[in-house]
Length: 252
Ligand code: NAP
Image 1: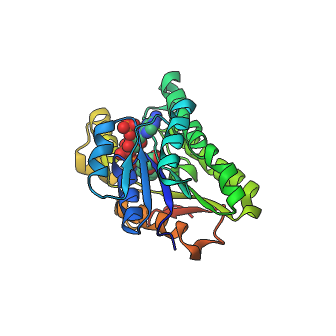
Image 2: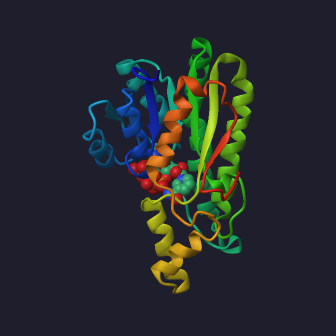
């Protein structure tokens, strides 16, 4: 039973994070969402009474500390932490700017570590907890023109495996969900970049992103959310250290 638990979902103000927050709230979980844009967070919080919004920047340890302190004093320690916030840029590796490399690693990898680190000791002590990283199929295989993203997501999968091993005896599980291209704002931006850089039509750009997906369809945000809810359930208690691919069979 996950009803009554308290969950943190980073990047809950949009896309996949919003859908995860709503799915957990529907399962009667108290959900705290964070991100840097207060208005986006408030808009999602207004969709369900179980969702509270607290603005925070996951790349700033003090900001994350303030978030934990406020959320946990209001609704108890986090039982579930979903490190979902992320960012992506694209460019040929030879032309990738150091600033883009650093920013991507900072948000996707270091930010994911900073997100979960404050929860680890308490979860281990209480002998219960669920940590879920939203990685990507780009954490499992290589893709061109997104070197910082692929490197950061491989790092997230490695971080997940390290924590799953370290916490295995505590009753806490640590897993990653690895979606293929999900129909969100981030996907729209990728399509727009391809159109701009290659002169292809939007339809051609979308088809090129689906080239590696055997089912030839984009993943829906609620499919990612369903996997997260399942990983939080009692029945998934022996699922630990897994990178669950939600990709129509693109990776396994
Ligand atoms: P999105 O709509 O752009 O969501 C990213 C979220 O992260 C935003 O809400 C953003 O909020 C938040 N964020 C970014 N930097 C942050 C920071 N420094 N501190 C706190 N929050 C921050 O994209 P999405 O598609 O939902 O992506 C969610 C996750 O799924 C990401 O980890 C992404 O890599 C992964 N994923 C996406 C796809 C896809 O095709 N869309 C596929 C595989 C994996 P603010 O800007 O307000 O801070």
